[in-house]
Length: 272
Image 1 (cartoon, one colour):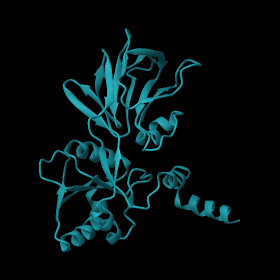
Image 2 (cartoon, rainbow, N blue to C red):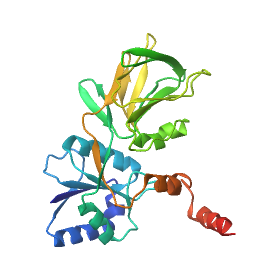
Image 3 (tube, rainbow, N blue to C red):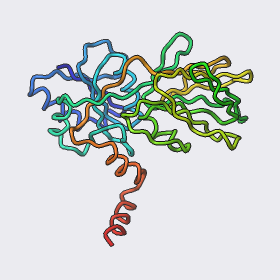
Image 4 (cartoon, rainbow, N blue to C red):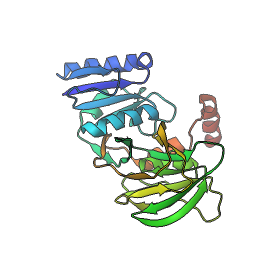
């Protein structure tokens, strides 16, 4: 197999990448390094070294080329990566070469003739300090008119990201649905809703003037209507056989951002 490596910080990733490369080449596989995610080379699998942001960028590249992805976390959260740089290189290689895949839904938006994909979310937000007005349509039916700082359209994967911080529900990756979550709505009735993944979501308004952000990257501004729907393909994540979404939710999300010193204190308090 041809296995590609992509890293946000090559220097930080160098040690673990080289150890994995040696093990893979001993097994007869070819390893290549990608400086950017626009390669046309034949790739069978790709390893993302970095945090969740790097994983999102890698997933956007991989889904369009049907390449399975394994994440190796070097960041703080690392919720999307199933392996860590502190894991044994042999264990990382064993997972990488296994055929235990997990499909994750991807959503997309078309902007100026280009289709942009998001594993986490697409955010439609204000371009000035003033809130935006936006009318939500689902499959052609009007649902609500938001007066808010923006609207998050999130996948089940993205339900533990920005949408969660904005008060949205957590969905298991196996749930076939999309979250629509207004941010700071100036209303008592506007609340997050969950719709079918088959739905076409449209946002527009006579006073529409918004910025479009796809997985944290601004792609442009729009004054017309924005249509978001499920992408034709799912991204394929490589995972250990014993990996559990709920265990990861408990162990990572409940103690996100804790420093090593805080971890020691937390452990002492728990043991006492």
